[in-house]
Length: 472
Image 1 (cartoon, rainbow, N blue to C red):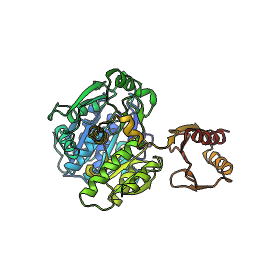
Image 2 (spheres, rainbow, N blue to C red):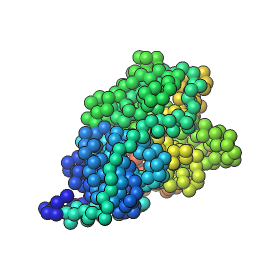
Image 3 (cartoon, one colour):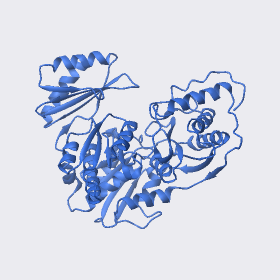
Image 4 (cartoon, helix red, strand yellow):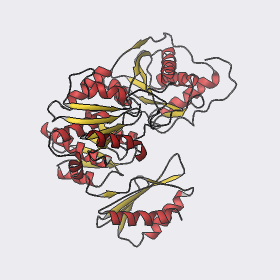
């Protein structure tokens, strides 16, 4: 970093609520990343301590990891470079090594993006409420003065491979060795699951499991030549759905770019909703915790997951706690409540045994275990956990979001409903026949609608009525 600066740095475009994300060469550069690495060490008071740094398969990740490491070492931290990692590998490393860390990834964003996900020691999340704003401000100061002051002793930079340890740790949490043989198609989307799947579910590093893994797009390629690594969009699941049918597979798994989210396809090529997966894993984690003497295990779910989740949790002797959307909220409530598991509608799944962090791979292992310990197909198993009909998330581009919500409230005022404002506005029919949530996006001019009802006709009727008001 030079002392002569010709521009003023403002990093607010790339510093989001939970992470850093920007366009390579514009809002995220090696110079910026080096300053962020230095600020990370200073804000978290990590001089003389270990900092872990890795990255995904995006072309800029190695350069950025090195720049971050240089900034951290300048401020006196000892850096361990983790090389290519998934985001949940970072959480494993931060938890098992009890060290703070960062990984370079833009998750499911297009190829021109990169970003930074950071965690404190023990995989505790860093968000705008827990250090990210301070890191931004100090990085801007270093950039605008053109100087990162050197610590008394420069930190050392070494290399540490965590893939085998991560794989062994996950295998220790879910025993899949007794499963019936399963044919599993995995779409890695050219993302990090192309590295972690052979290590955890295959026999690249550990003994073979009773699975035939059929790989789809396992080549690590941050240009995403086959489809965007965002399984939340239905068109990005089509190749996986076709492959499941073609190979007569029992199940299909789709991961996003940094492999912290997992989506599931049944043997008919149909998606199994993240809410159903939340219920399936919750049932297993409740039973396991009860088997270890925990009387009423707690399960976290955000307010957009199906009503079936809290109903199942209560029925199985657990306690369901509802939260806002967003991983920093979920992780905080997981820790406060001592929850054994948490799930979101967006296919983020959180585990107490994984430092309250989210991991798509561990969720996939639970689903494989649930499928493999019984004889029926996944379509039948999944139906147990999806008794209601959902609209999925529908976005409306609205400038005056408040007025749109007010129109909906006025239209439904005569209905026998309850409205709560935990996260947006949730309208719930007192007879239990339907609910819907309207949430404004924090970053885009969108109003997001989710509807769930006891049958499809009612869901569609409520959906269309709400949208007519919103888009008027």
